[in-house]
Image (tube, rainbow, N blue to C red; front, side, top):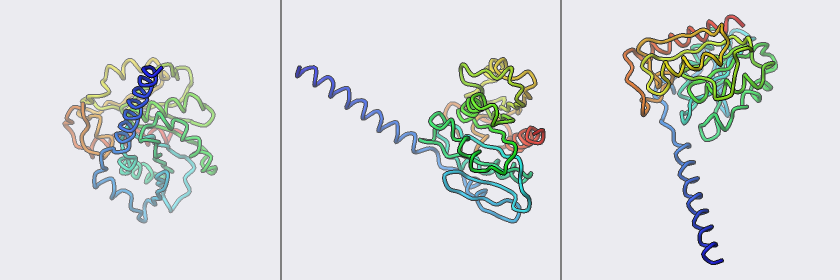
Length: 244
C-alpha cells in the first residue's frame, strides 16, 4: 500500500508540474509588434475598444455585417489588430476574441457570446488564423443559423468537420511559403469545404505574416512584405463580406 501511494503521489506530482509548465507556456505568447499596438488607437476613421475582446468599427456609419476573428494558437489576440482595423475601415464591425490560455480550442464557442452581444448585426461571418481558423470552422459547422460566411487564414477544418454540403460562402487564404500549413494540406482540406470555396494563394507569403507577432518556429521565410501579405488577405476577406 505504501508503494502504491508513493506511485500515485509521484504521478500526481508529475502531472502538476506538467500542467504548471503548460499554463506558463500558453500564457506567454510572443509580444505583439509595435504596428499591432499602433492599430489599437482610435481615430476619426476607425474606433477601437478593448476588454475581453477587441472591437473595431467605423463611427461614421452603423455596420450591419460583422466579422469575428479567432487568433492563432498561442498568439496574442492584439497581433491581429492591423488587419482587423483595415477590414473595419470598409464598413464592418470586427471583433477579435481573446481565447483562454491563448488557444482557441478552449474557446471554440466564444463567437456565440459575441453574436448575442450585438443584436443589431444582421449578418455574421467568422474566421481565424491557423488553430483559430479550425475552431472557427467548428463553430460554423455547429451553428449554421448564426454564421453566413467563413474565412480561413492559413487554416483548414478539423478532422470530422465537413462543410462540403453546407452551401456556406468560404474563402481559404494561405501563403505559398507557409512552413506550418502547406499547400498539400490545403489541397486535402478542400473536400471538406463547399465546392464554391474561393482559394487564394499568396505567392511568397508565410504563416506568421498573417499577424504582427514576429517570426514563428517551423515557418519558412516570406519573400514578400508582411504589409503586402496582409493587404491581399484583407482584400480577399472583404470580398467575401461584401457577398453577405
